[in-house]
Amino acid sequence: MLTPTFASELIDVVNTYKSDKMALQNFYKNKESEEYYVRFSKLYEDWKKTIKEIDFKSLSQQGKVDYLLLKNVINKDDYFLQIEYKSFKEIASVIDFTTDINVFIKERRRGKKPVSADLAKQFGIAEANINKKIELLKNKPFKDWFEAEKASKAVNSFARSLKEAYGFYYSYDPEFTWWMEKPYQSLSAKLKEYSSFLSINYFKTSIKDDGSGIIGKPLGREAVLKSFAFEYIPYTPEEMIVAAQKQFEWCKQEMIKASTELGYGKDWKAALEHVKQTYVPAGEQPQAITDLYNQSVKFIEERDLITLPDLTKETWQMIMMTPERQKINPFFTGGWEISISYPTEDMDQSDKLMSMRGNNPNFSRATVQHELLPGHNLQFFMNSRNKPYRELFDTPFWMEGWALYWEIELWNKQFPQTPEQKLGMLFWRIHRCARIIFSLKYHLGEMTPQQCIDLLVNEVGHEYANAEAEVRRSFASGDAPLYQMAYMTGGLQFYALKKELIAKGWTEKQFHDRVLKENMMPVEMLRILLENLEVNEDYRSTWKFSTDFK
Image (cartoon, rainbow, N blue to C red; front, side, top):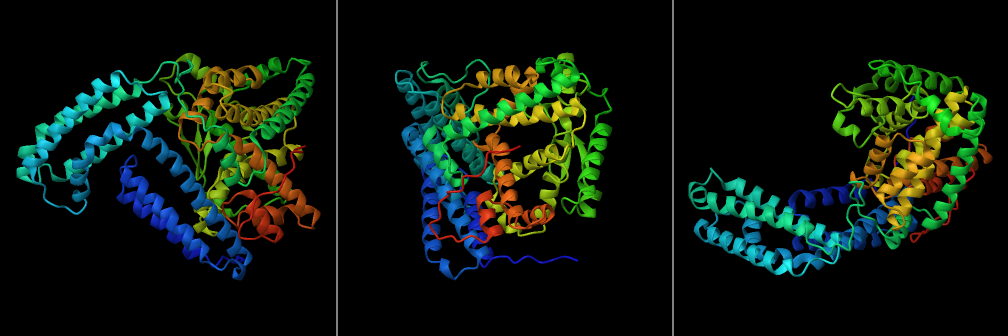
């Protein structure tokens, strides 16, 4: 029998904010324009006023948490918009020739018929202005590659808007087509040339590529601290690095214990090399994944740790990851389905071997349940059925933290039995510790991508290609800046929260089932709900969650 859980009074408010934002994103498509930044600044200011008009004290506990979550999301959206807006203002002069043409682009939204002869002249003037700017900027390079990249991005964004507006009329309006085909083609080519020029026009004392070929954008300490606050993490980045280093050393000592069991003594790298050789032959990885899934589900159900609905066990499935995606995700991923990362025929032999070694069954022992049940697959299943409006509050500290928490749980309950299995699970555990260290140090400007790769190869035991892909995913794939540290940090938050509730008389199953009925949010907000804690409308994080993960 389904037990309904009470949702808050603010469902419609949350959904309205989400819909308002989506409506504007669909309308103002040039994200690198004054129009876009001004309009979204107004959206957030209007919503801050809306939030203030809500009577916080009259809300239920669910409503109070949604109030805090929505207020937090609005502030977070606005904070990062203003960072980008400030960067845009610094380079806005590179597109000041677009004013007249932007009128054409805006009027296109309502289908106004342009005066094509005049528009053709404007295109010609714009092209001439670009030529002047290129000559001028050759002697005035940007101070660093960040500015150059932003300038190039602004030109590309304008070019996309121009292409869309041109395509609306071209061939449908005979007069427009007659006048505009050549001017558009010429201006479009010039914009491409201009964008390429801008992207490399910076003082070479600013290093964009450290030789790894991985191009990211470090946040800087101030933005890292602000990001921590948005995630309700009451620590400094330096404190989190120290905590991760302690966990890293614990993992190393456990690896030495397992290495000794295998007969390699303190040479854990040799023991890890032994484990890498346990990979299954090409073509047999899907069956190996199924076997691990069956083992973990049986283990969990025998201990009655969580409710696993029959439908979710019935409907999960596999897909094979493309070679292109494996360059960013060298290991399998999951959600509604599990995506298997394993060699394809057209890979180089060395890459094939690295993929097979890095995805051996003992390494995968830590991650099959992470991707399937009770990890991401179950999260997706339950999120679509319980308070789905809270998808707005998505955070990797909840999504990845929950899946990582289960790796800690299964380790503590002796799911790994053999030394090979222990080393496999520890490999991923130490990797998640390393993620905190290298990702934060990168964003603080203390490590380069190549140094991050070297750390994963030399101190964690990654295959080089897999380490490179992990770092590329961390900084050049579009993942949120704190995404990589969220795995272990979120896992520790869930672990600490469970300990608090067990001390208050909850069972593990009660805790696990309740978590998945509240949907996504920072773990501290979940703590407020589950423990029914007092909060005010200006709540700030003070929860020093445990870093004792043993």
